Length: 564
Image (cartoon, rainbow, N blue to C red; front, side, top):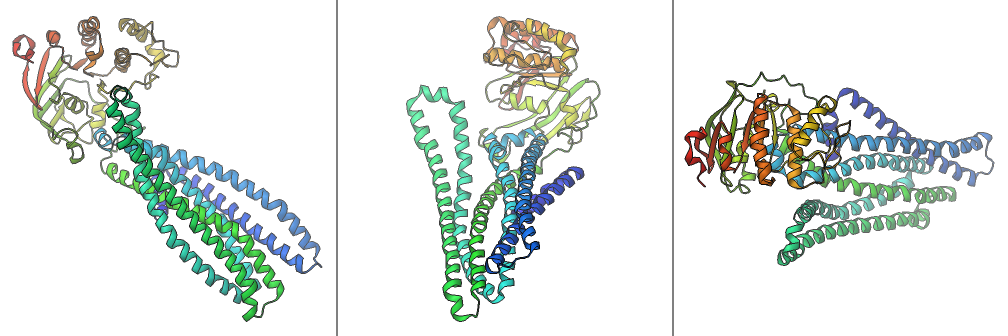
């Protein structure tokens, strides 16, 4: 029922046209699966009839021939539809999840972390899609089982009742056992997140682990191995429990056969033909019933994934912004004149407070004018990057006002406000293609920038805007990120510790060539920096300390700004 509710809720969110196409395909898959299952049972009935009544008619013969050809054809058609349906559902769910993430505020994504998000995309969505396929296969096997039961009821309803009593007891025992297995699968999914997080640590922290043997040993023996072993044990035990349940189910099926052959004839008046028909049908039902058990296992596994997706969806849905997703139509903001912070504060959520040592930014008040180069300095942990994310609209204030040209920024216009900015953050991501940029129109400018940034001998850009390589030093990668940022041609630029990985010569190039070039083009530039000797390159300098503005003045009147 949990899975059914999820799919109904999911389909309601889809477009009407896409929804109807997917439903039609689903109905065809189920219909062909059921027809295939019923056809198998009819074949069984014909075989049993002919065995006991050799005087068959031509109609029975041609029905048998038709079913022998038709059932495999229908089954193949059903499998082709099933493959088409499964791939569409998997890809559609991943796309829907991507759209959902795009509409989620940056701060919420950071709170959740990649260790939660990536396993959902890589594993849980596929498990859920597979569970829908399992549901379809359950329809196929259930149609065989039900049609077999109907056939046995036609042979002898008294013997069918006797058989159903035994099967009900068997199903109850099976369910009691599988409930224990389900708990192990929930535990396995919980620890899968820990395993994935440790794998991220293993790749991102490989240098630090190689250089410190005690740290490496502790990581492997105290974090990685325990998480992997717990995950392994939970999966192995869970599968073992389900295997035992299937084994008991098979034993009970043979008990049914034994009861029919040896028990029913002792107290029921049934013919040898009926006993033979029941025995043949029960043996034919064993494979579909075992398949049903296997599919039910995958449905149980899907419940664990569903809970993780539900938890994540609940965490992000209430924060999602209606106009910041993919293909959103955003009314551009007017030409930039001024940006003002009025008693702006930002406090991290309870989840993030521990990570940021209970840091709170603000209240801060300042103003940046169009065409200005504003330098923001301060020690580590003073709030510079948090301020940059507030400036660019990635974070929203918990108190105070942000005003663009005097207009208050709120949920209705924050996406349009963000489109005024281009930024290179400390933890920037470098795309290998100039996405969102009409490269042919900017090719000449890109060539000039490659030369100006002194990386023309390292990187080439093809006609589609693809970079020949991004496998460069961190300083060179930052230059490529800067090139992309300039080509975006936004009104306001934010560079967060951009010069940290540049050599002294190119730091001077950045302050004395790049910034004046942007200023000459009428751009407003906000630079987060520790380069005190270049403070004279700014029109405006702000110094932060412990989340508060310590100084806010012009560089010519601020010798104290160079204090460390």
